Image (cartoon, rainbow, N blue to C red; front, side, top):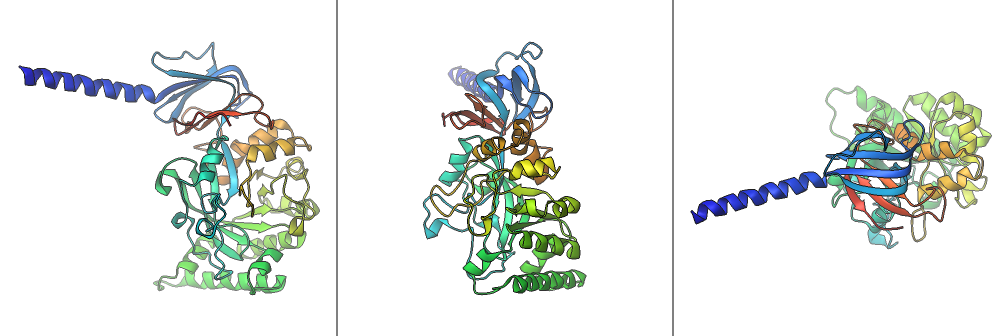
Length: 400
């Protein structure tokens, strides 16, 4: 009898634990303003979350919060922000050789290097961005080499790269400009750099024609670029480099994404005609060197010309090693970019550029429950992030 009762109590306990687990995955997030990015902002809105996904979104008076849902409130609720280009996870906050894997200086051309093999999901900078409402990163090998390696998409959560992963190979990071010759003796001049790139693309074309070639990791990934399976992300700042990247794209037909593009305003018609998106340089980038002609109005210029763009934190050579994209968007909004366009570029626009708008970027039923909460205007520097949810789980309740 005693054993029987013990079994009953144990079963009841397991049922109770299971019930708690189920309840822990059901949430109602209320906001005085909810920016769904899937229509007009909702006053006194509510977002229902169940099993990691958004269940329903609407005005509080029209959306009933079911019993057992944990309710959290904030002044402003948005989709989690998207950092469209970073090296966080490869570049660490300690700024020491052991946590700086974004650029290998043994060779200027290494597209075969996988970001997957270097990403540290536990890096403090990942936590830093997460606590500021950034839930998705396009990160990986950085600028400064003719081809520094591959990039990938991750969520800013998880203890391992596998837990964070969205797409293991999104693009290959290329760079044209003086920064390459500053890091390597070869290629040297602009003409030499272009000749080296054209040679590698031609090799990849020949490799793709072979029926059973010996495995060549470099040619495999270059073939993926040529076939459009992964993007060619070209960090270019000067008008000459932008035109060179566009010329390569016309010759070889790969999917090009311009990164940085500080002098895009000088060749805006060519970019527009090529229908190429831009991961705009950080608004507060230091205007020097290759970015000497950078302008805080760049996002507004791209927007006025109908060129798809998204914001990035970019790469910083100094501590704390990363920017926070909503601050960059806020400054862009103060320099001619409409606020609605700034918020869109941080969320749905970034998701569209990265090809993941079916999962993230807006608060819509069926999408991943990636949500950021604020105590004021998210583009205002004095506003704090007060909560962050990723995949339907609270990953930060800190006030940042």
